[in-house]
Length: 422
Image (spheres, rainbow, N blue to C red):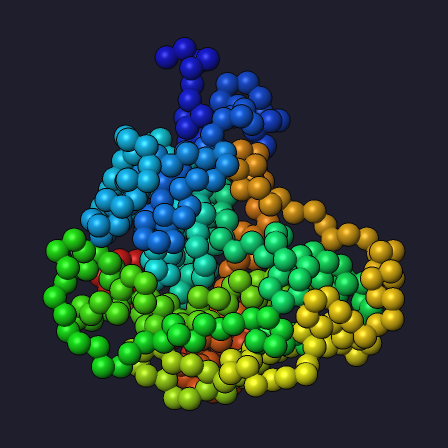
């Protein structure tokens, strides 16, 4: 084949093989054959094309060339939204081996995220993964290892640390980080997340403890849907749009919304490389299968910073951020006189790579990646473990394990149903 006709995918494969041994060099530095022009589109495949997955077909700079789902009905609906010729697959393992795919977008229930992300990385694909990043802390470690070992670019699909107004704050997180970095509020800080500060924990994502055993629909491969999760008899409420209410697949409202709310806090507190040292919980006793509600969860860091999660919406008249020198309220209001004018004198936060297509083309780490994404997902999973066990837990953020609590540590790496492993 003429060198001038070498495809970008051949170049990507060559880069992937070299990644384990050499630092990846941006393509615009390499130049020559294989250079991916900024006008070129990256190819994408979506695993899981239910309602969430179907919302991710059209992103600027990408073209969807393959889709995968274990529900034939989902595939049929999705195919009708796309150009003819898009490949339709049943098994994600076939999809991640397609040579024409650059990016794999994972939009399955969370119990599949870890396995699929790690396998996609090993197959030389860059990865766009829905939140939560992984269902367990241990799976997050494995994804981080796989992505870095194979030199891939990873994006977690929550964007509030770098884009859009942040719920009740009415400003982007960048402005909150600038305020925190200025130290006008003092240190340590307490951040309270609840309805009065614009956050809703979606407690309708709870499970049922009396599920009827029902016939598996003909279009659904239920065994493959379960995958690594323990076998449970089929019930419609266990799958698709209501799966979040069951421990085997997700973690209720905290699993659904946790990274949206908590990842930006890790960012503006400067905690992207650490985790809390304890988590306290106030919650009713949980069912072994169905996720329930909780009243309050408190994370404490080594320096005294705290994140308080108000589940019931009963904490009123407290600021979003409370510091020894000042407070920040919803709407970016503060008790510091002339706060906005004073803030103008401070430097802006460090720039981030917020365009995933750019990150992939130039081999630059995305703003929300396998490192900081794993840390903010660890917050979610620490909270869920404390809720399940109903007690305060101490955590070693370096070893990434609970201290003197065997039951809690068993939930870091949970058994997978064979033949699935990560």
